[in-house]
Image 1 (cartoon, rainbow, N blue to C red):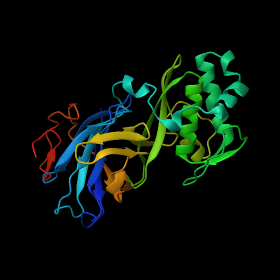
Image 2 (cartoon, helix red, strand yellow):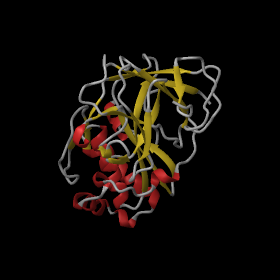
Image 3 (cartoon, rainbow, N blue to C red):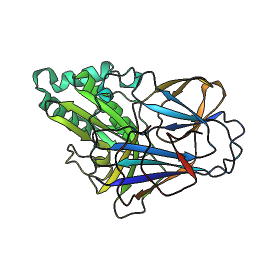
Image 4 (tube, rainbow, N blue to C red):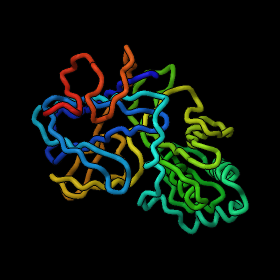
Amino acid sequence: MPNYRLTTHLFEDRWPDDALALALPVPPTTATQRAIGMELPCHWDFETAAASNVAQEALFVAPTDRFAKSHFSLHVSVPEGVFPESHFEAADIDCFRPGPDAAAVCQALGLTDLDERARVEAIVDCLKAKYRYQHGVNSDLPLTCDTLVGNCLDINVAFVQLLRAAGIRSAYYIGHFFEAGKPQESDDWHCWVDTVSARGHESWDIAHFLKHGRLDVGPALNPIPGMRVALSTGRDLRFTTTAHGELRFAHLCEPRWVLAGGRSRQARINVVSTPLSPPVPSAPVHGPGPALEDTGQRRLSEPA
């Protein structure tokens, strides 16, 4: 199985004056990736916390005066992982709860008369017909509209709402996509959805198909060649930390500066993917991790 190091470079020259901590996602193991470990700068002190409403962990790094343009690394193995049952539980996430518009769409599609296989197909066909993909555009219009414009966030939230209304289990992921044949770098996130039904386990990225002008939407993550890595699962994540109390993040894909009053803002980053050679043996994210060259960093399991 190919193994990759994702190195996240933070562009800030110094720790921001108003930042109380830096929140980092701990990458999950999914059906299509295995999380191996993390490497952090040796001088970073951090607290680990698990979200109360989603099966997702995060690190909260304490302020340091030796921060300038720091970087950290994640190690993952793709495309084979371990099926994560906990990601498909009906998490307490407001934006995923089906509203009256989702119920109306399901009724119009006649989903109650269809088996699970046909329900999933009908929902996918409905969304690919309704949506016009546009990067950076968010839509608050109801799903009953004949035509909608939105980005991957809008399309996948609508997908999860309709799946839930139809009784189909799903998991929501957010991370980075690295297109084949191009520099293996990313400064933006992308999200997608996995389902479990009578069709089995499937991964869907309706938005990515529409972005590239393709209507032959099927259960495939990459309609164009490339690699993707999930950095977190779920939305509207809620953490309780010792140092900063309760914190909430709409997403936790890219690092976020924790500010006073429970607020946060996204850090400026660039993520570079590089293959690891020789391949790294699998190990728990919090385990000892692989034998790697000396990078001046410590693995997550090593003492501060």
